[in-house]
Image 1: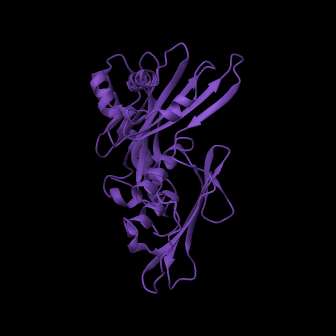
Image 2: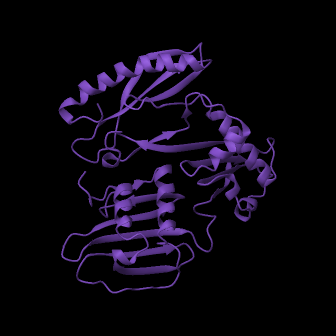
Image 3: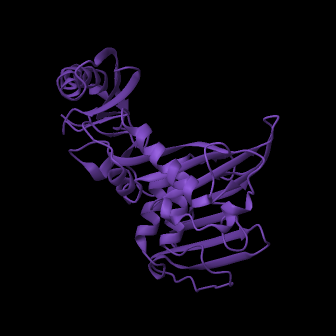
Length: 332
């Protein structure tokens, strides 16, 4: 079992689906006795295109009915099962916490909380292919209480997007001035304000507007062996409130929500975006070296260069950038 080679993809996908349906039937009905499994909706999940032998994974996705349509994900190898059934309770708890924190109520505020965690695409070799993002799902059988919801929102294995809508009576400055870290361990806060005619009049994005000083406007990271002519490069740009990236100076792709979170977590973890001083290092002949530059919306510009080993994290920095942006450092 596990992730197959290309010649076995179609056969293996059908095999996974065939295995997943009875697993779902038995497991789901133990928790939700009236649920109806929709076997014709099940399909094998394909991984991202990062190598010649990575399409079908251990995961199958489908739907079931239980007072409404719910989604289910099953790992046919580990028998892990995630469902959407209880996620609304997590969102409700988080929105209540957000209203309490910002001094708002249901009359002037609405919103929803999206969250994801990652699991290996393939259990047989979890490091080879990377991870699958499991959005708005909890393990089958989870009972959501206030204590559980609070603990989940502070679980570092999860990342959360708070999408909040407010009316024109709300002072948007409260989102910039309030420390929102109590809402969870990995939180991205996006707020949009509408007037009485339902026209958008203001926005707040914690990754853009919630930073000290200027927001990140442009970020370039380049690395390679000093003996190589070709160097690997990624550029991230802020455009109209969204971040876009390119690895070829030509085609730009908008960062997904999870990519945004991973990117900002990564540059914070390795302190790549923490100094506003121009700090230039010598590039040595041996080993891998890098160059880094970024610009903030307040006009700050920083350039840094040196050997990869001099960075906090060393070669792990290259690994994580390559994993996030598929730069070609590793042939997977």
